[in-house]
Amino acid sequence: MNLSDYVLNFLVKKKVKQVFLITGGAISFMVDAFSRNKKIKYTSVAHEQGAAMMADAYSRLGPNFSCTMVTSGPGATNLLTGIACSYFDSIPSLHICGQVNTYEQQSSNKSTLKVRQVGFQETDIVNVSKPITKFSYKINDPSEIRYILEKSYHIATSGRPGPVLLDIPMDLQRKKINPSLLKPFKPKIEKKNKLKKTINFVFNKLNNSKRPVIILGGGIKYARAEKKLNKFLTKLNIPVVSTWSGVDLIDHSKNKYIGNIGVYGSRAANFTVQNSDLILSLGSRLDTRTTGGVPRNFARKAKKIMVDIDKHELNKKRGLEIDHKIREDVGSFLNEFNRYSTKKISKQNWLNKCFSWKNKYPMVQKKYYKDKKFVNPYVLIEYLSNKLRKKDVIIADDGGHLTWTIQAFKVKYGQKLFSAFGNSPMGYALPASIGASIVKNKSRIICIDGDGSIQINLQELHTIDKLKLPVKIFILNNNGYGIIKQFQELYLGKRYEASGKGVSNPNFKKISEAFNLNYNLIKNHKDLKKISKIINSKKPEIIEVILKTDQKIIPKLQFGNPIEDMSPLLPRKEFYKNMEIKTIKRDKKIFEAN
Image (cartoon, rainbow, N blue to C red; front, side, top):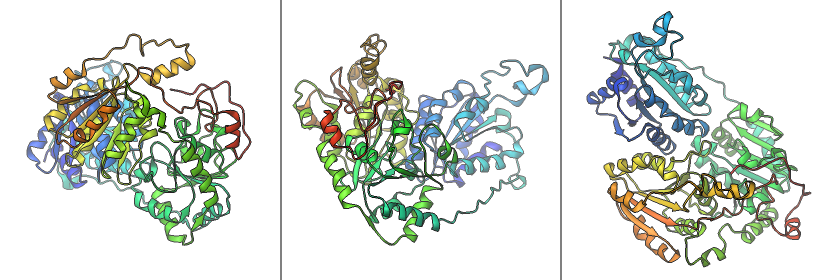
């Protein structure tokens, strides 16, 4: 068979069912192989960036990962933003790029080694993509295709998962190969750690502490360990908080869940973490969006136990001291904890204290409902979360609308709520919703976007119309980049350069008509009653929601404060009353990012 047919057969064996692609000269022979293989499908998309983001969301939700195929040069470079989303959030995916013929490449002749480009659209995508892939490789000989495919798959799905990229020249795509003569890849079998002593240690630390807290991170999802987590939590009657990546791991109505933590966390969850004496972090890298801009002030009186598969995350030295590092797949850790620990741990008085904070400082305040002229985003998200089903998928984009969603949405167990948290590019949610709907057999997806972000990958509205996907696209319109305007108000003297000033929106109603999609307008709280009918339709829907142009994110960490002291600042007497540990002054050198 030719090499292209072999590649598709390999994907079929690995149960890869969907490829997102845009064709082009350098990938044409690979794409042609689909005409001879009916066991795998492809979706033609409008932009390569969208293809990578579709594959990312597909892999987050699917039983297996997805794949893209694009041409050389701009086709390959257009993938990079979506690949970065997968890399930073530990999502496995395979990206196959066509490359110019081997005899047209710089490396084909000594005299052309220093030439910028030889073949038309020749680009060294392997070296360009290396910092944001786990493995990036150009096929140099047809005989290595089996070895490299198997190696790529293993690397993408083992350890801390992530994207891989293969660059395949045109002339090699059509080369005849004998599969029986190809060399296989044999991964090293790693010895499993014996965890019994580790589990006993962690159990005793939790049991002997007075104010322990469990932090749920996205690594639990990427390890497919949700069921193991549920069993684990039945043994513990102690407070549970989440990072943004872990926000959909637990039902928010459960009597252990306090909220999400960090720069835009809930006051209750931040008080819980900051007053704790023991932290057990599961699958979170504890980045500065979680710890605040001064990591040393995070849970500063607590012993910290961190479970993470990535040794580099455990060993980074930037102010946050980890007392006990457990380098282990979080799924294996939870499985062994459930196996060895039969007793339960209860800290009811401490849990009651944390719940008193949760009741006292709700994310959605009653006064938000009093707005008559505009829609308050906290009200919108709370209303939406009450209407959605337990198996719904909600994908938010970036900036203000992502923050309001994470802060106000009350997850029901079984729902999936995510974004590209680490890279957080504008334009992610729309193509990601397409990938999510496809992997969920064309089920409805709730896409929460902004007036600025929606424009980055607006072309994929045609893909939604073409495939008739029931994606519900909420465009939260505050007429500019709201999260940037809030940053400029705090630190830049209210000079709204390139956020309010110089920024404008298209007519979203006309955009909807152009792409043959239903348009709906929500301009005040009375209009919210329209939402039930809209989200239950079987068609794609665009829902434009009108917000105040100066709508704020509340609460928010700023000015180098520790995460327990969020803005708007509480009255000092009230704040001190909430603190079990000694308070500290803010770091005057730090400006929190937007």
